[in-house]
Length: 372
Image (cartoon, rainbow, N blue to C red; front, top):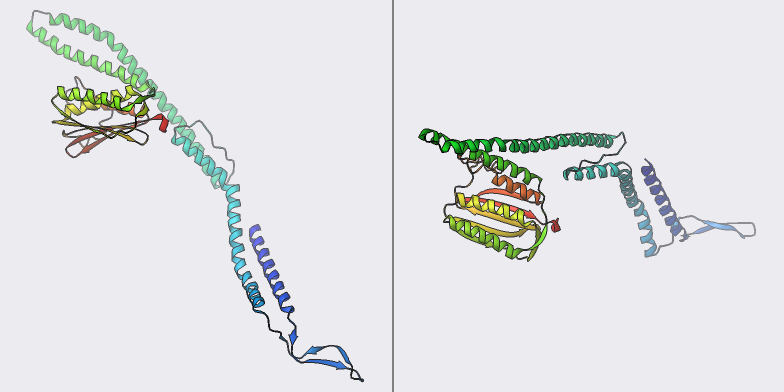
């Protein structure tokens, strides 16, 4: 309302000032025509006389243009004043009513997206935005409680797995000792039963070991060091070449890395690399292809093979823990890709699985901390 009144006052003032200026210009030009005077008995003129007609003297072109502008200007100024006052009112409303709650909500959204829930939204207004901020604070509190409960359950699961793996070691050791005694029996049937038991005992030992290794992986954090890329990538290629040669597979290389150094945890990269190469060699028919690329401030490693690829039903589950398409779980418990995914995410990157023309492709990205 104040800005509407201000726009009205400015419009009236402009109209008055322009009208006054136009009248001043017109008054500078005297009226012309026949002038009549009053006279006395002696014939002397009395007063200044009057004009019978009101025709003014011709104006100059310049003054005519000025008067035309003074007549048009109020018609233009009124919508301009209205627009400026509306804009000023909107800016004032934004500063007093919208800026603070929107800033609070934007900052809260960024913190929640970064998994930071240790904050509170402080905006006490009772208007709609105040209600929105209150709802946002309720959501934050609920998320914090849910996250705390989730992390508590995760830690309990880790402790339970560790205790389970630890407690199984002793009975497995005892069973292994008795199994060795049974395998030394003179009865053939007893030795056959003992051999079968030995396979299952060995499988359980491998399973317990994988649970212990998985817990250590979940707790580990990368230690970044600046490494020379080309020698490091050459060592990865040599290790892959040895694995492929042992399994009778051809190895192809695509190295598009041009930088000389990058900050990485080489142990993380090497462990992921070894898992990907082992999987590719196991499923490839004849050829394994490696690719090294610098992308988005990090190192992207890709391993593809010409095997059957991932089943569509398991493509999005292949990196889940203990998921495997193999029937024989004696050696493989479905932890390889999950460990790769875990290490990539700890390194600020990701693991991506794809089916390509004539095979499968797994890409592992490692983000360099200097580029974050």
